[in-house]
Image 1 (cartoon, helix red, strand yellow):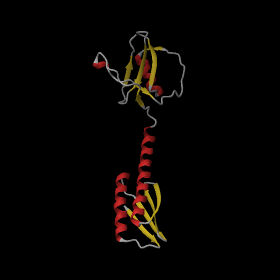
Image 2 (cartoon, helix red, strand yellow):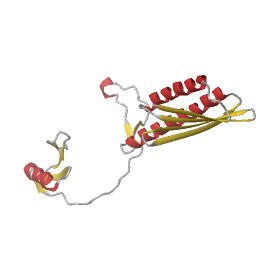
Image 3 (cartoon, one colour):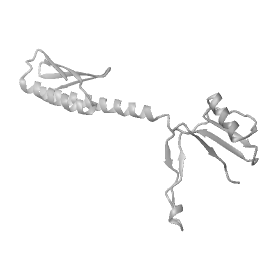
Image 4 (tube, helix red, strand yellow):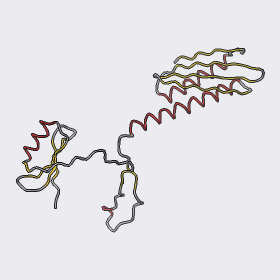
Length: 185
């Protein structure tokens, strides 16, 4: 944590320096690590100004506030920095999770006759079809489909099982094994 206080036409008192260090520690709790904070206090006639520049992990926030009291100016400027840092953290968090499909309840759950069947239905709100490929479904065995996944590096293969004449899906699981989906007709 680095807190640098400078004054233009005003003397930086020990109480102002303590207030700045306390608010910088609180800011670091929101940011999750040490931050460099530069505070410039200025006075013009009866107005005190506080300009605060906070830097944390290549991110930078700036706030300027003017009031009649130097402590209030510092406190209000730190409030602006806190709000900017929280908004930036929320934006980064949302950007990370934007790629996943967000699910929202389609309707309020209705009381059902069987409590086991009373699951709320979820509908994707931002689902889009990116690309479609039309390919013929070739008859092959499960072993041939597994070889195709391994040799071509595919995530899944849709095929007609040569033994049962049913359409099946063979996919690569997260643990590295293969999973087989055979729908019932």
